[in-house]
Amino acid sequence: MEDRAKDDPRFKRDDEPPFRANGNTFDVAIGDIDNDGDFDAFVSTIIHNWAGDSSDRSRFLVNRLRETGTVTFDSPKNLSVDRVPAIVTPENRNFNQGDIFAELADLNNDGRLDLILCSSDYSDPPPHDERLRIYLQQADGSFVDETAKLGIDHLGGGQPTLFDFDHDGDLDLVVGQTFNRLNAERRREAGLANGTLTADSPADAKPTPRLRLYRNTLADDSAGLVLRLIGDPTQNVTRDAYGAIVRAAVDLDNDPTTPDVWLHRQLLGPGGHAGKRSDSIVHFGLGQATQVNALEIIWPNVARTTTSHGPIKAGTHTITLGE
Image (cartoon, rainbow, N blue to C red; front, top):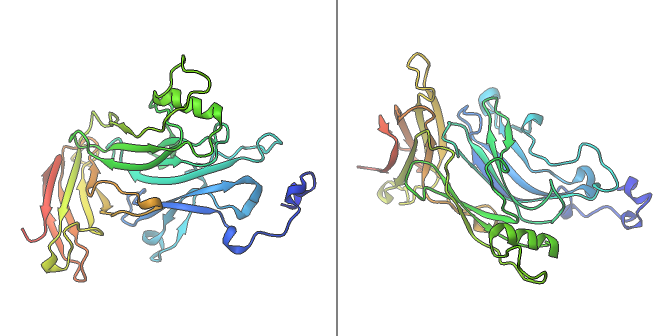
């Protein structure tokens, strides 16, 4: 702030009060991104470059329980998904990153969780523009922005919802849209991208935000398992079974000489910013396998009732506690 104030009088002011410091975190996505058996997180945050180090960043929080025996988190640099300029210039020093929604899901059924990130605020120029972004996890554990390669052009992405629309064992995506803070030029760009404007539309024509369904074709060459869990209130588990933890042993490379990989998922209910909600299912990408060799469900009651199942073929299945 002091450096900025030297040539910009707007920044000659007192420090921000505590409630304004440390960024604006809107959402959190939970999942085991490194397949080590504990649950990690991704927090989506609005970043203001003018706030300097006091503005938190959207980032992965990797749980080190398995390595240390204690629940501690860190944010490895190789997992950064920032669009922060490498060099700050007068032209880009005012950038923002308006990340509002986030979700973790195995979009390509390879056994690794990927990141869905929706930027819904601050209409900065690319690469800080507000839009839907898809980061696919690579074999080395890093995350790469594959949005353009996937042919996705969705400005003002908001409220992601995951479900298996076509019942083919992978997760499809519904994304809302907002034109919040977009200027006239960016609104027109968004309208051309979502089809509510055409090249012949008058310059003053107003585009309309659109809800979009993205049918997943990333996983067409691999299988997935979709589970719908039903709890038993007589065993102190609600019918929705929110909070259940599911472990699945999968031969991801379909090589009997290599050990199975244990994948961990948790059935999460509505939460995050503005009541974000996906379908009440647990999904496992199976890589090159066609089945889960063993399945363990830890149901969310005080007794932590545990049931074992398997093998289970790819597809959609319902498992009811007590049956």
